[in-house]
Length: 149
Image (cartoon, rainbow, N blue to C red):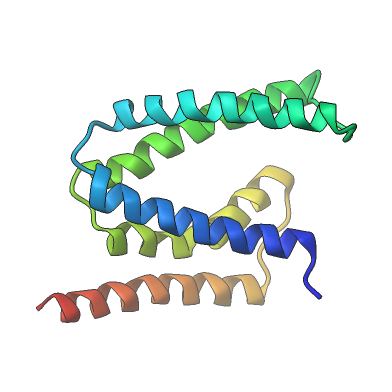
């Protein structure tokens, strides 16, 4: 019924949403770098264990090499800074609604970066989508301000 990629994306959204609630309600008072250190020390053994499980069960493991390894390292550096700024939005006083509302812009920004990276230009659907994404952020922010009063 649903493809594996759709199920994975759906589960990821729920898990990211849950982690955002944890960050806002329980962890926002801590230093961003301290939180990142806890997460990365937790993530590394989980990744090693997952990779070990794949090897033990005979699953195909494709590790990046050459230029792809460089791109994987670049993505890791980008993830680090993205994590820093994202968590920093909470630890500097941002609210769940304010921070996650901006995530609505993620697909639009990703598509623009892809156009710059690989070439091409947006079509009318893309442009209309960008406008709708920006409008969604404005409307959610306005709605939150009304509820907060």
